[in-house]
Each structure stands twice: as structure tokens, then as C-alpha cells.
Length: 108
Image (cartoon, rainbow, N blue to C red):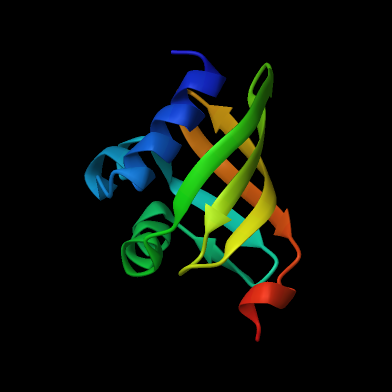
């Protein structure tokens, strides 16, 4: 599977709240860095995703070897936020996720 396919499979699994399938796309030692915090490890990350249940509407996906960039709207509890995500894939698993967005609408 290509890196872009792995990332899109991951996003689709999150949208369907199939957290086991989403976790299967992640390396156990993956890391997440975002505007509002960071997470270390697939278990911690997936537990947070189970609570937040974000929904992703992918606008654009671009791949460059093991790096995948996504532009997507994320529904964060009724507020849709345009977000950029940078996913790094190694050995068929996502090892790093970095996201940026304007957090002001969710900090109200």
C-alpha cells in the first residue's frame, strides 16, 4: 500500500469510528504534534480520538514518497476547522502526525 493510501485509510477509519482499524494504520510508537498539544504512542492517541470523535472532510491529499499532506475540514464538536496535516509513513505505518489550524473558534 502506498503512503497516501495508508493515510486515507486511517482517516476513513476515524470517520467511521472504527478505532481498531485506525490504530492498525499507526506505528505503536507514533507521535502527534498539534496546536493544542502532543501525544506519544498509538494507544494514547487512539484513546483521545475515541473521546473526541472528530469527522474529517478531506479537500486535498498530496504525497511525496513517505510524506503525505492533507488539507481537510475537521468537525470538532460542531465547529468545522480548516486544517493542514503532515503524515509520515514508514514500513507501512504512520509514525508521525503534525497538524496546524487556527484554534480560536474552538477556544471560545
